[in-house]
Image (cartoon, one colour):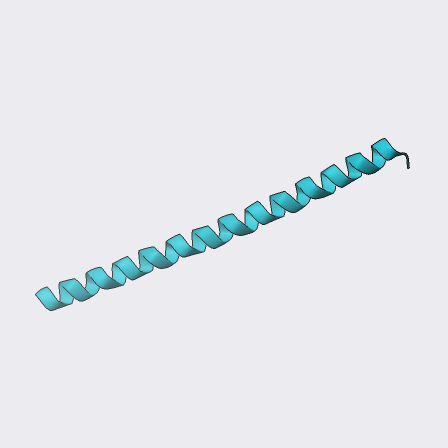
Amino acid sequence: MNLEQISEAAMLWLAGKKTAEIAIALFVFESDVERHIKLIKAEAHLIAARAA
């Protein structure tokens, strides 16, 4: 392998690593949003139960 091929392989590896990090971050963010929605729904049920 020459220097150009090595640097290209390194850039592809870094790009793949970044993509994985972004995918993980999005998954974590998405599950956080779902958790908040569940909490809000639970609170709404509690408020409705108190009002009844």
